[in-house]
Image (cartoon, rainbow, N blue to C red; front, side, top):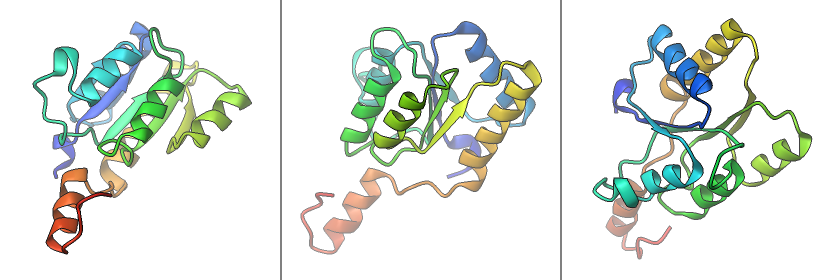
Length: 164
């Protein structure tokens, strides 16, 4: 899969932070399609093909989820819990991108299976640099886990039930 074909799900309710992240990707040459969810329910609807996203194929899982913790409707911890409990999304890289510096938030997110915890820098240039580095690492350098469909296909070929 080409880097630009990899979809990023940005779950962010703050307009300024959302725009900064999108501008940072653009400024850093990251041309990936970014799906924006403005709350936890919208994020889960996208991931699990419900609501406005009912027609989306579930096997088109994002290559990266950037997840804020302080979200309306469902908070980031609840969203992360759902992501990790579903076989189609449990391996998807999730980076917590938040303003929280609370130790309890860090512990909770890692306990729930977050891949990384990044505090949003207050400074504009530092924010651009941090999100650019995140994009480059997770979309260019990191080797993503196999998609659920390829795992199921491989296990069926080897005579197993296809359950993972």
